[in-house]
Length: 422
Figure (cartoon, rainbow, N blue to C red):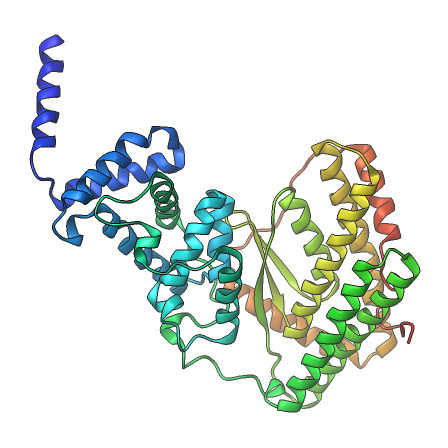
């Protein structure tokens, strides 16, 4: 055994003494990436070796830092083509990696040529996401700001870079909710009902009013005042949504169905997603949960999707406030509280939706049926293998009761199409 160990040590010494080839460098990167995610405490010697190789490299092809950044950029570009978007990717890096990894990923996204730094033809929704990442995480001035070449990269740079690389290597395909960078400039044409500038202006004004009303509802400490603001916001949204659907049907046009992703933060991500599903279901929108990215994809008519996003934000604020006021600690209590809140809100919103349909009469029935079919077709296209189900859990009884009471007290209009206070 002693002789065999000496031979192994001698072989390793000879290996360290020769110039490493590209395969040796890539093998070391592969091992280090796995350690970064599974056992970061053992990375020290590997990072030192990576920097050694970088300082001795005479070209980028032998510099581990250059190789890692190049692969990260290539995999980010591939992620765009398989449906990922900037905010999704950074959120997932934080969810499955760490906050430093999310920050590093954000800066890599901003520097990546196809969808970041050179994205001159990017659509507005994409550039808005990039702007949000710059505001939240800052912007790298160059590639060396990500991972310094020539053996000069620090330990934290290496750890974040390797965690991100490991995530990108296992990243599953997502759903193409909008055109990827390779198709910018030849996106699908705007739907007929959204082609009028006047129509777009009316929608923008309505959503601006809704956001203003909900912001006031969330900031006031007086329940009656909050109810007035929220009822008026709900009234505006519901009337606009149903009127738009009727106009589309009268014109014989095809319903435009779109999707957006809502990123769900910890803690209690699944319970928050359940609340979002409750709001979506009552508003003719399908919600699909992704455990991997901790996000929910909303699929429906654009106005309905925007409405659900706004209502979810508002009800989540109310649920969090009520849970804080309950002054009870413990993970079990909070999970039960949020689950009960979501269950009760679903009942209240569903009741409001039925009242809305009844107030429009029989003329609305075939319109809503056509709309539901259009949404179902898009869901099948994007998620051909989606599964449904629920997780069975035991819930804290006090939390469930408190959540139900809070949902009963939540600020929602009694009827979705009743006129709110003027």
